[in-house]
Image (tube, rainbow, N blue to C red):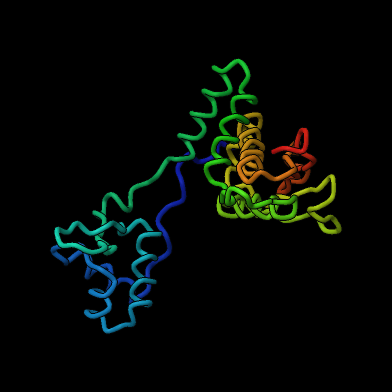
Length: 234
């Protein structure tokens, strides 16, 4: 039996010369810096400065925050460097996920039902809610589900030859961002994903629902089967 590592991937690839200059500037600054500040000191366009600053945030080498100010007007976004030891230490989110899903699986009487309900709540939260009188049909409902899945790290796509306005539609999911956890706790993780899709469709008032999720029909493929919502309601 192969023991899988419980820590998350290590540091990001080395930074380019321009981004290193921006990082060193943030570390030397006495206070957080705005995009215009960095652009002026480095002699680059503000869009280029913002690109490097956001890249440092993504790499967990800097943080973005709202500037504290006493003067009237809209506060600007500023950036500051993160302490090196905080940015470069190992992360063990996978281990945490394994522990939490294990608790759900072992301690709850019906873990699949609980996971679906939690997934539905998060799906409603993540959905792009339509205007009160806006009608969302099946095509638009699936488009919004696909958008949420993409933003969450999945790689969803409609099955070729099928259209979203049929009574039965399928979304193929070819990348699971929680693959290793799902392989160990399928009843919890896959139920969360099913509930997530249902919650999105409920929130946007689509006339369809996610009836079931067929996990790992191929090593890197899951199928979400959609159908009419009960009584025509989300």
